Length: 65
Image (cartoon, rainbow, N blue to C red; front, side):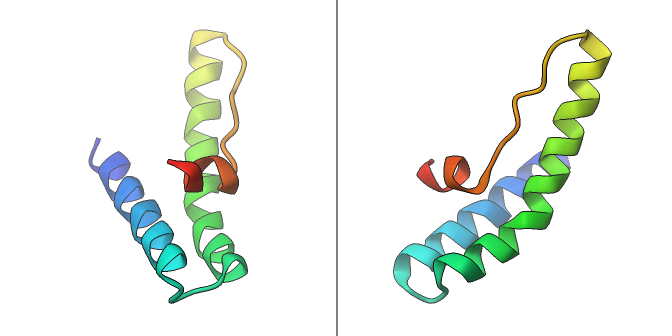
């Protein structure tokens, strides 16, 4: 659960800096890619465990939040 909170904080910080103009869209996307990849990997593991399809996250979905 601690990793989930850390991921939320990282994404929130990247979104805040992008919206304030401190970093560009491309820079924000590059910073968020490792976090998103980790989230998708964990989602894949959970989906496999329960026998359901994986819903993958992408950068634009997370930045809408």
